[in-house]
Image (cartoon, rainbow, N blue to C red):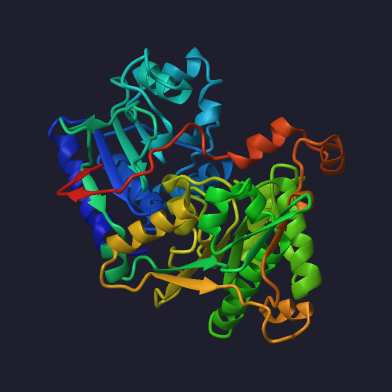
Length: 464
């Protein structure tokens, strides 16, 4: 496969830097741009010119690790399964923690090229401030690998700890050796143009006991009422309206792209299953579910990748780095609200697999933080009309509530505390077969640590 222009430029710059004596290279490229193929081709070139003996790739999840291994093997023509006679391996950061001294001795005995995918998960400038993954990189890889390559699409952390191996300016901005932003990726047809729809409601009834309060927006509701964002995204009327809008758009896209798919990111396993039932009862749609409670979630995701099934529902397993290029539409219904996670979810629908890049459609509630993130994406692409608003219909037509099945909601959004899932109740735990701890793990899967939510500013190759 022919390299994209940015991939070829990045590889040339990395090789030049390695030849000059610098053994580490950091690449920032927007999610969906093709970092996996770029890194795999760079590994191939280093093997061909005889600069390395082995390749080790580290990434944040099993499915990304498997995709990276496949691409490395395609590009290099060599096995990277970690078995006897192979030329390396692809592992998760978590698996790295259980590796013994025999494994790490390879970096002293051979010339090893180490690839770090989504390096922002690994923090620390030294043992005193490193997280577990960062500490292992500092103690076992830094200064011992022949060459290292760090990849990221979202170089943020919300704590004050620097990203491991990264270089920073006096202004505390991270310095990247090569950068490729979303605006350029769109102009070159590498990524789809994002279309972000913020959904709101101007007639909200919030019931608490015998009290009924009225609010004119989700922002007003969340600021003034005793209502959490999780309560909001679990409200069936809002969920049904968002999915209705997204399903209508997906049906339109599938008239021209028959295998176009949609992703719904839920807030918990119980929430994912409720959404699955709603899709079936209200929209007559069958969806795949990929959560840690499924027997083989990785296979479900891989099978979805090759099928033409319309919808897949997940919590945290389809987010960062997961390669599902047939995804065109997404409903953002997770309670996680960091800019890093927002942009990673958006990246799932921006990967191009068609001759024409087209557009990726993200639907989400008009919650203040998410609205701010959406407008920051719009600032990155000044020539495009990225953000639009949609207001849920009010009950003026007199049509029955069942009209929600045809993408209308003919009553004001009505919220009641008694209607929401109580995630700490014993009955909920027994019904779902998972504990509160397990649900918390699933909700933050692939998002270890805390991340910075701020504007990514462009000043040459320096990023905030």
